[in-house]
Image (cartoon, rainbow, N blue to C red; front, side):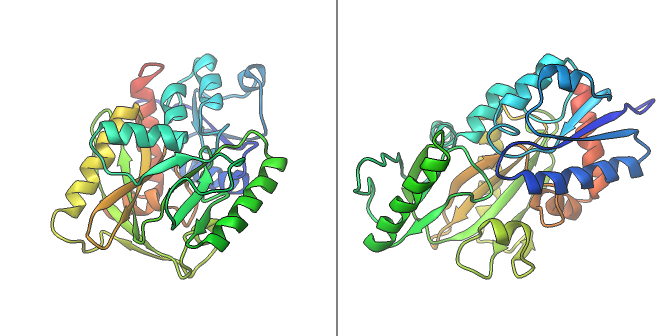
Length: 312
């Protein structure tokens, strides 16, 4: 690769997943430093373009999650900054952060996804038959998710959502059919280029729901890398994830989540274009089984960003 570029690693941000971002950014900075890169680590809130221009580094590795850090606004700033950076450009980041838009892309690509509707909180009735899941359209890490199996749970969820909107008035919620299923995640590296096939990870949380605590704090959550699945399911999941990532315009990396129902049908759940890089995170876990250590994964993403420069 010649002389190593210096890397600006960004963490923090104004979104609900700030703590996860800081943990992941620390890991990425340490991994790249161990490979001999000069690393400049900066913790952000909501910087301006001039703030970013004052930060050193030939290439930017953002490790932020949520609507601002992962959903387009930061990516627009990085494009204007004029340095290569890891991850999506703004348009693809926005589509992937929007769960409704992602589902529309999946349907166009022939990928199954559960029935859904945008939630109108002025209407107390559920727009779909129970059971359902209500959740924000533009959040990740299970922030604000409510599983409603009966009318009582629906009423409690609507009350909680209305209260949340008082504190977060820009949030929009959706409702989708509840699928009793095993959660699977498929990591995708370089979907627009040389796309190695990472193994699937199956998630087995101790509680019924794989919530924020189960994702980032609990040691009770189980993970099975490359699980034994019914014939053809792994191929179906991989090709579905690859198809959706390409159609969205994702570059460099993403993690695509599915629900595998009792009939072995995978239903697309969502796409994460800047998946976690913590000790509990699933893309690094899958890459490790594939043969890419955490530092090697980070270096591969650096190589993708250098290759693409400001294109794509």
